[in-house]
Length: 282
Image 1: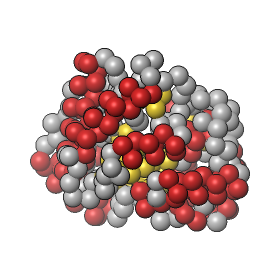
Image 2 (image 1 turned 180 degrees about the vertical axis):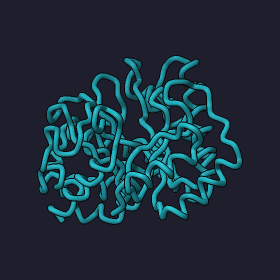
Image 3 (image 1 turned 180 degrees about the horizontal axis):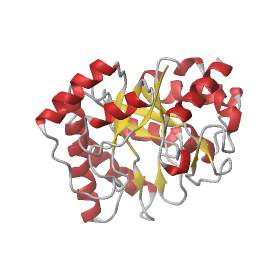
């Protein structure tokens, strides 16, 4: 298993490799543009070339890009919907350019329009985004937290999306431990993780699971509140080891998205805590 984290790419996308190397990570997740605005970043060819070179030099294995949280592929509002589709397509283009393994995204919310209406819009959007995937880059649905009209909180909903898209060969999955926990999956219990893996294998296929987000939770089991906590400091605590140590996950890259010390993001200490937790359970 590789251990890494989400890193800033401020100053050029290649700088994310420098940052993950500095904290001792094996893999890295990045945004391909500012997470606070729709305008895409125009990545310079030299930054992309340096990304590839530094990835090899630093021995970084997995690389994934995270789509903007602004994106909502189920949005009933036409302007937001079109912006979301175009932004996702641009993100996939950037991910392919740097040789990323996948683009991780949240489906979004139908905002009261109804699950079926949201599903139709999401599938139409994903069909446009998937056509941009090339090389080894996949599109990875992330299980979501949140209440109301949020789509993708359960494996059943993600399975429905996969089937509606005719099980597209580049459509996969990223599992987030915190999101699972607050959506009612008690992944601090070995038996619950076994059941989750069984359901995943039956409905989606373990071969489509391409990445993990490993985060503790500051919110209660089944609360549907997305609140990440540092490793060992949340309500999952030591039990998070039941998730990260499962045999079905040991070939994957695991990415931290924790607040870190003073909310500065993942650091070397958080990575070491994750490695130690994994070692104790394995």
